[in-house]
Amino acid sequence: MKISWWKILSIVLLAYAIIGGLLLPVPALPQLGETIRNLYFHVCMWFAMMILFTFSVAYSIKYLRTSSFQYDIKAKAYADVGTFMGLLGYSTGAIWASYTWADPNNPAYASFGSIMREPKLIGAAMALLIYGAYFVLRSSIIDMDQRARVSAVFNIFSYTMLFPSIWIIPRLLPSLHPGQEGNPALNFNDIDSRMRMVFYPAVIGWTLLGAWITNIKIRTEMIREKNIL
Amino acid sequence: MKIKLMIFLLLITVNSLVAQTTAIENETMASTMRSNGKIYVVVAVVTTILIGLIAYMFRVEKKIRSIENDLKK
Image (cartoon, rainbow over all chains, first blue to last red; front, side):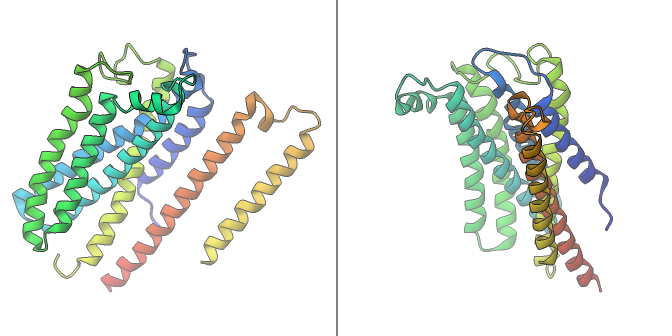
């Protein structure tokens, strides 16, 4: 069995991200403690999501230009796995926040109330719900060409909504979430260089794993739709 | 099915071997797995999950490749 180089790279980088991410030294910060290591996992989910969504919108545009049905399949698969990564990012963020943002002296629901008002969380939920609407839209149109065309246009809309809702709006409002004054984890001044050594490979590794899953989804769909391709 | 079972059995044996060695070394309280607040246990757990995931990815990959080859014929 021949394995593509990028699948191997994904395995190697993920192994490095997990072993290095758990064992290599990190800066000792108040409140965060060891949970700063979540940068290699939680943040990577969001980065992988954004990269996969970028592929998805690129294939949607390609579909609109060529009307070739295979691009519709690809756009859908990338959006699918991207949303999945986003949901993983959301749930890991919920776990992380409950141990760093929530005040253990208050009853859980009191902290929950203020955490749920976080603009970054609401923005991320919005973005994911818009992508949810993309899938609802897709499944509600029976005619194949129409479905591909309408959902390609909606996909472009979802992508343009993604960045305002997870990057721009949360920055205009006060938030506990890091990244208020710049690009969290990308800014060279606010990430420790030791962490950068693991973080960037981790982003690439998780993204490649997402691309691998997408690759398998696309091939399954291609087989299923082999009569019309 | 057979391969799945084999991987499962392999994981169990590896697991019990690791457990045995740590149990023996427990008396000195200095084994790797028990140092540094037992962080290596977490590393072992997460790595096992990663290996399992990757193995599963390869299985799906193999399956879909065989279907693709059947279609080509």
